[in-house]
Length: 168
Image 1: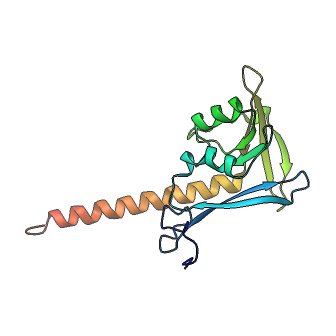
Image 2: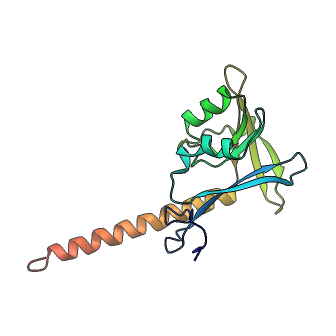
Image 3: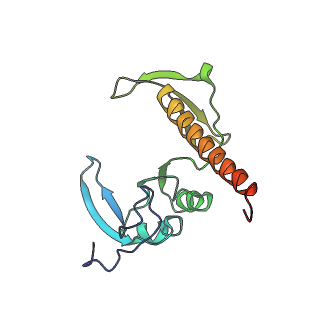
């Protein structure tokens, strides 16, 4: 219930757990992957607006590698990170996928699944993008799309049936 944490608040949950109060956890790891510092932040704040506060609160040194998901990796935040001397690793916010299978290499994941990875260098040579493809991910996304289409069709059928009823 997080009653003892004043930063815990209801907010947007990626896991669809809207009944639970949330907090955001920030960590600073050393070169061996061990936690050096941690801090909790308000759980009902839009992550995209909290990056600067988090890095300041965690006393993150310039040049550190900042790892973040697409929720916080806005163009403005990425530009700010570069301006402040940070490096970053982020999930892209782009909706369209650009993948050239002929330029990709195939690796095996820890779960023994084949993943194709294409490395693309930006025009200025300062940013590396990795495009990844796996058949398992493609199947998952196709299943999600089918489920959404089915829900839409069921909703439309329900609306159509209601229109044929008196006072529908």
